[in-house]
Length: 167
Image (tube, rainbow, N blue to C red; front, side, top):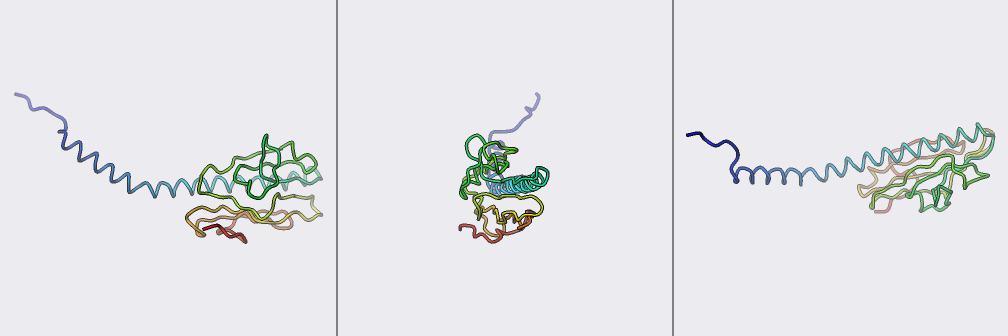
C-alpha cells in the first residue's frame, strides 16, 4: 500500500495563519517604503521642473512660470493647489504649458508652498524665491523641501524649510 503525499488540512491552516501574521507585521513597513518612493519621485519631478523653468527663461530671454496645474494644464495660481499637479509655462502665455507633472495621490500627504507660483526671470533679473514642502503623517523627519533662491536656483533640503507641516 502506498502512502499519500501532501499536506493535511491542519498543516495548511497553520501555514496560512503564520503567513497572515507576517503580512500584518510587514504592512506598516511597506507603507513607509511606499511613502518614501512617492516622496522621492514627487520632489525629484518638482526639482527638475524648477531647473527646466530656469533654463527655459534664460534660453527664451523671457520669464517662465512654475505653478500649480489647473484644468488642461493651465496655471492655477493658488497655494493649496500644488498637490493636484504642476505646470511650467511662459509668463506671457500661462495657459499654454511647456511641461506638466502629476500631483500627489495620497490622502494624508500635502504639498505646501509659500508662493502661488514661481517666476523665473532671465539672467540679470531677480526671480521669485520661496519654498515647496512635502508633508506626510510621519512628521518633520520625513519632510522634504525645495528651496528656490532669489537667483532662481532650486535645491532640495531635508525638513520642511521655512514652512510648518500640519500635525
